[in-house]
Length: 209
Image (tube, rainbow, N blue to C red; front, top):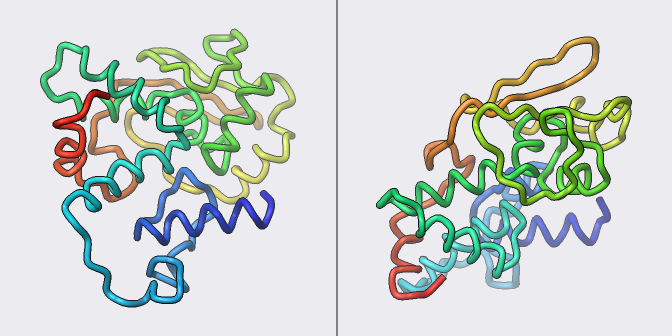
């Protein structure tokens, strides 16, 4: 990761006041737990809109999504049968292939996981899948292609685990090979950062996703 990219990710987390595991290396708030800028360490007043906007931005930055990508997932969540579309949304985002690769500990961040997928290092049920945004279904198995365990991204993740594997995934390591299975559809309780879903709902209440 370049110093410029690392700095941008740290600044994003400081601005939101929340450490976002998907962005990689921890510690963004350890030395400067306040927004960037000369007056960042002063108490800042937030409007109701700003508070709601920040919750949306947390999703965007953690899952490394552009605005139109997030809106597409929101539309899909709202067309589901469940009345709780926020829970549906977070379940979809957690089941993205790049996020699953990250959560299984195959990559140190979601951008790194996306790189592994795009470069053809990931197999789903034994078949190559190079689209990071694919949403997995329960029962599908994810593993690295042969010899990809030697990839520097994978080695970094193995040597410095970012997070524990959540209960909706099953991870197996045998003979130096890693594979995982999606056991169930996760809900909002598995989001790995503080997220006020009420504010998120309010933000989109009067908006067309």
